[in-house]
Amino acid sequence: MTGFYAGLDVGGTNGRLKLCDSAGNVLGEFTAPGCSLNTDGEKKSRLRYRELVIPALKERNLDPGSCLGICVAASGIDFPGHERDCRSFFEEMGFLPDKLKVINDCEVFLYLTEMPALVIISGTGSVCFGRDENGIIHRTGGFNHIVSDEGSGFDLGLKVLRAVGNDLSGRVRSPVLTPLFIKSTGIDTLGKIDEYINANLMEKSQIARFSLLAYQAAALGDEAAIEIHRECADALWGLIHDTAAKMEADEIDLLYWGSLLVKNDILRKMVDEKVNKGLPGVRSSIPRISALDAALKAAVKLHDIP
Image (cartoon, rainbow, N blue to C red; front, side):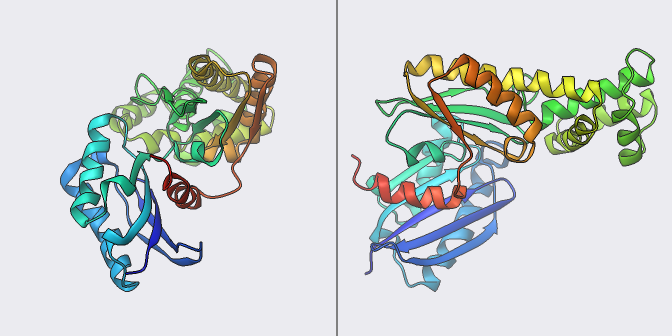
């Protein structure tokens, strides 16, 4: 049976799988519904992984036992128990334990460099991972969106709701942000804001969607929206600083990832200024490849690592 490598990028909405042979030739790319182990649970997640992997291997006449290396970069791999559960799904399918690497999907870019590296993610949520010169992974933040996820889309969204509420109550004017918010949502009273928050506080994406309004208003010079960005940049810088302190490395590659840091140039520039001042030995960039391709590269790279 032909040997192959497999990389997976599995989020809460979509799961993606990419295969290549031992020479690096791509054998196929596949998509199926995704899952997040920490929220969807073991039963649903096991089913979703099988629905992604088994049909793809059958289509290419590949046997899991012939896999030379597989890297599963998955949402919801937050604690050792999650990793053990996810590993068991793939071992049940026939993948060999010593060819299998399961990591949080936010970690995957750390395996593209030999030197110490950091990845700071700000999308719907936020988290920072670091990999030191001994290969040890350090994590800061991202453990719960109510008390963590600082500097994320959810955080920006909450601050938008607060700023609009302060404007409607006559405390602080937001002459651009508030009209944008009302036009976008139809929410134009403090009572409606209260109802919306009570109904959606546990729905991260429903709060995080307001981060786009903060960006639009900040680009038009709204001081309240600019201040929201400053506060979130401070929070992301804190995650970076505290993770770097655990690594004790002089030179570090810093990668920006997540929709906010990739698309929101106002926020990214603010974070970059703080990094350049506080950690002059750090080199920042945005990954040039997708998380899926990074997972496949990691599968190949990790094959020869004990």
